[in-house]
Length: 342
Image 1 (cartoon, rainbow, N blue to C red):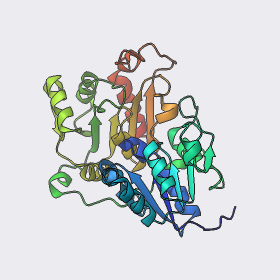
Image 2 (image 1 turned 60 degrees about the vertical axis):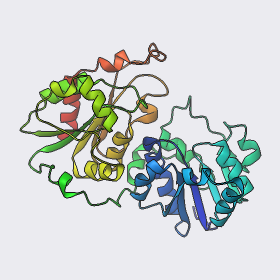
Image 3 (image 1 turned 180 degrees about the vertical axis):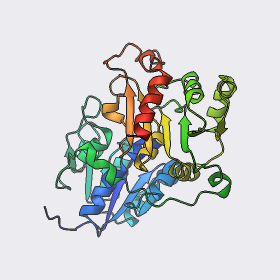
Image 4 (image 1 turned 30 degrees about the vertical axis):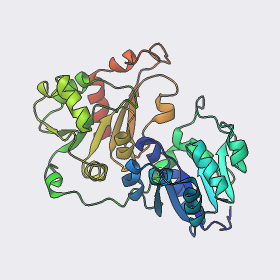
């Protein structure tokens, strides 16, 4: 299919979390492939800037926080000055949809799932995420139906579309921690509340059964998550583990994941970063829709997941997922071993 170039700039709007942004990068990859003369801009939150800047398919980051603090007239002027021909509302935000219309962006694409898109967008795509059997990355691409030759591509084709090749140099203080004689494994026990968790106790038990001669283990997370792990007694239960909680910004975290060999976590941003960077990325998931791996599994050439072989919603409103907690550290080690040595 031959596509005629007619967009000076395309804006992808996704102002939510790191993992969601990572799973939107393949959309940027496809748009850059079929619209190579177009500038691809990503409208997002400032804390995800490092992810965008690492992607070779995106030419510009637009900080929504900075725009949202401007008076309305200046917001409109800013968007008009972008001279964008198209905006894709991947993560729907009413204020952004209204702004794009007021700024006169010629083509404004949104899903039918938001009533305000009927008055703010001039191209609507029938798209329901909540009950969809499709992966989040595939759904993001689906929003570009009509712009791409195929708007539903197999998930196995997605790993080649992340484009995370602009990785910054790792500071020597962090680079020196990497052991080239062992498998450098990152454990990321917490999720900042964005996902059901496997539990710090399980991560501690996993660390204890990983042979120190084969694995060098790092623990990552925010400073607050590090304090929670200390309160839960995690570091009293482990021996040869390097604590990096609260010691890296996102730029450094991306570079450290790229320097390491693998990562284990629940459905979090770091898990999706590891998968996108081609690392061993093992996710542990609840069997609850729409949190299950069918929607949120890590997508990468060396990515995989564990989930209970059932469909369950018993703990939907209660917090911890017993089905997930019951996945044993031995099961996780066995899965990890199979991924490290396929």
